[in-house]
Image 1 (cartoon, helix red, strand yellow):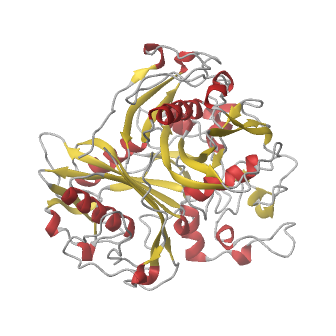
Image 2 (cartoon, chains in turn orange, blue):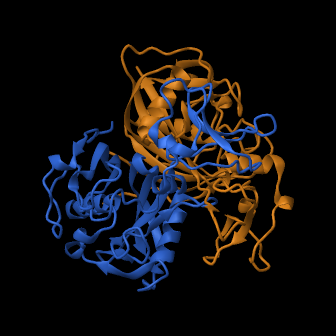
Image 3 (cartoon, one colour):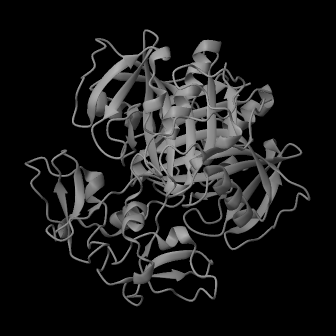
Length: 283
Length: 283
């Protein structure tokens, strides 16, 4: 039967901060405070709707439906869905008979389209070669100049593993074999799920130093990984667990929830916590 | 180090069909031909864009951009994004400088909004109580009248585990504790990823027989699971692996890709195959 290691929720402030250049020693699986160096909520890319909603604020533009006194939940108010993508008429944030709040076309007789917005998957690879790990320095915002593993939004018409390999080619010009799923982090506040795989560089083991998306890409020995300059909490967490597993010579799979405070200050370690962590050793 | 069981791709026709009422005996992890009883591509719910695109066909309505002779990939041509959700002006399927085909607002000077459409996550629970498994008989299309585990689209502002528990409450009126992630199936042809968890019914172990979404809900002994009447290939696959694991008293986690042919006949076992399967035993 499964040996479940997790289901604990510790805030970052409850955890000792691991020195950024050394590996933490906290097996079995335990949340770690990663170097959270990027500005505010620092998603890789937020969903289009949430990003625009935050940037521009649209509560005043929306009319609310028959929702009683409670009104829509704040995350729905941030979604920008002003016109119907099917008929071009104005949309309205209304409460459906199911009690859910959704943006619905005001042209109800002829259209009535409901704009469902769901979380998006970010897929990526922790690619290893001769004991080193492939990292890319971002050439684009957010977190321009910071280091990350190759990762990006999963596309239609591909699998998550294919997406991880595609992103590795796009961001580092490197060809990889996907070995196994490694971690799944939900980040509800930005509507994303990070799914990262273990991977191996394939012969001839070439890396393109500079690409349209990366200022540089190269392999790092574990001790040299620049944890103080990692772009995203999701990546920092994954790398720390990965290094623990390499040292222990035992792989685990990890599943958990990263919670962040929107609008919190950069470099503030209390801006996120890992919750509902489920880590399992695998054979 | 990880013992990787998978990365094999076997078509359904390459596999013997297990009797629908008995458990298959094919450890270690190996693809199984599930009972694929629902019509054509039978997604739980397809993405709004793909469903509508298939139903109505819109290639003729679209103008194509500077894409050269190749034109957009078929899955992009099926997406319905006719008007800009930001400004209401017409959209156009164009090839971006990155070579990707996207729907972009024709009002480029003032808007230029690009409608990114990504896969959606379906989250659900394989909920156990005293050796029995909770199934619901669907009260809605697709696959009305067929059995499934509680599952549905992951929402914004929740984690995948929270979504799985929410769906179990909505579809079966049952309160569960999420135990561990169990399987992740990508289904590229319908733009979905299924993420199912192992779960346990919580005291007082009540189930609501009928809900708005289910004709009935009840617990099944493994031998009684109606594999001939399971709604979705994703669920049938997950249940078969689950029963294997229960019998072997060893849990695994599974990750793979379900490929389907759009428009294929109901009950045709060649309509899907499981590919790139990665199954790992957990300690």
